[in-house]
Length: 136
Image (cartoon, rainbow, N blue to C red; front, side, top):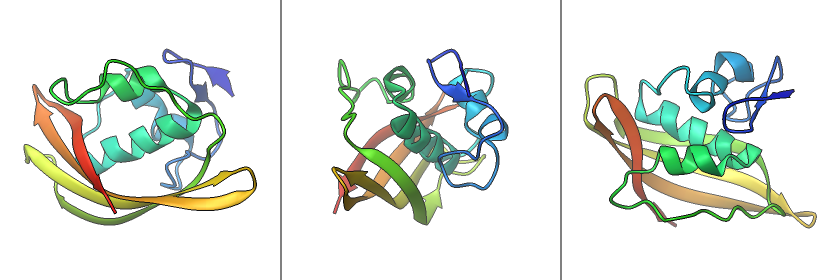
């Protein structure tokens, strides 16, 4: 894999988001700024892939300014291994708001774990942004 605009990987490898497509056909163009997510789910998947690849700049750029932190310190000990999208509400091409429920599986020091979240997204100026989420 080679580095892109946010220091991310590119190439024919499967995308970390679990879509089944290659990185370059899926989240790669979003990470490189060549495209924007068309749906809330696409943005959520690209953000998961950004966590898996350590792309904190992309995570900040896709976080709504009202709720975005000043910085993100990614836990490099976490290895994100699988994403399950459980439910979506709204978030389509004609919507201005959407929610995506997911479980993200990870490993840390040989132990498995997971994060379950229902994330909220809003579209502003034709772009989707992560607003916030409820973990549980």
